[in-house]
Image 1 (cartoon, protein in one colour):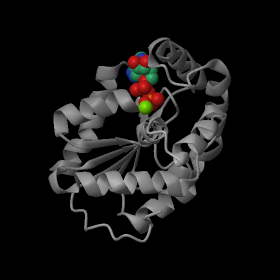
Image 2 (cartoon, rainbow, N blue to C red; image 1 turned 90 degrees about the horizontal axis):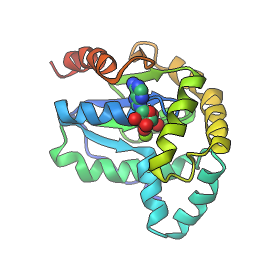
Image 3 (cartoon, helix red, strand yellow; image 1 turned 135 degrees about the horizontal axis):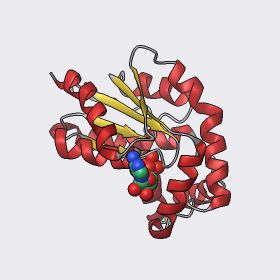
Image 4 (cartoon, rainbow, N blue to C red; image 1 turned 30 degrees about the horizontal axis):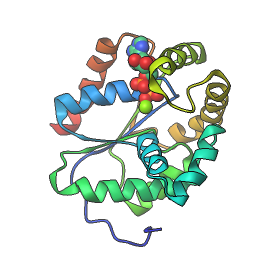
Amino acid sequence: MHLEAPVPEIKVPIIWVLGGPGSGKGTQCDRIVAKYGFTHLSSGDLLRAEVSSGSPRGKELTAIMERGELVPMEVVLDLLKEAIIKALPDSKGFLIDGYPREKEQGILFEKNIAPVNLVLFFDASENTLVERLLGRAKTSGRVDDNEETIKKRLHTFNTHNDQVVQQYPDKLKKINAERNVDDIFAEVTTYLDLLVA
Ligand code: ADP
Ligand code: MG
């Protein structure tokens, strides 16, 4: 636990990237990184890296992630904080992908790290999400890309997300994620161009 360690002042934009599993967060973040050079931190990737490290903390996480549930928020926040501090000297901005998953996580992030500047929410129907995740499952090798866990992850997402987005009415951009990757990205750039102007 490093919650007490101070974070140096962050002068670059912080963007939260929200959306259900399969909504295209990772896909859009790749495009954003290519155009704006931001640092992409996916909470899921950080957690999966911790799992592969074989640490005791990682073993605990495996069981929780296989059930499609949320891991304890201090763990995610710690991993994010470590990654942010490490990248800070060279970073042009941070894309925080898949976090906060619940209202309390957002409050904790802003209290312990820095205020958020922009919240991008990729909105897609449940049918679309299931279809895309089953497509991704063929190649991803992720333990949670199977039909059973997908349903639980969608349920977990739907349970918490409304509360998260309602918390940030002024910073929130709700984006129709049912369109093709290029059209979605075109809308994303309108918001990011304003932010970096
Ligand atoms: P997330 O990071 O939100 O879980 P991903 O970016 O991994 O989502 O996308 C999940 C799957 O959906 C991937 O197989 C990806 O190729 C596909 N995908 C992403 N965006 C779109 C889109 N706009 N239209 C169709 N398929 C998409
Ligand atoms: Mg992702």
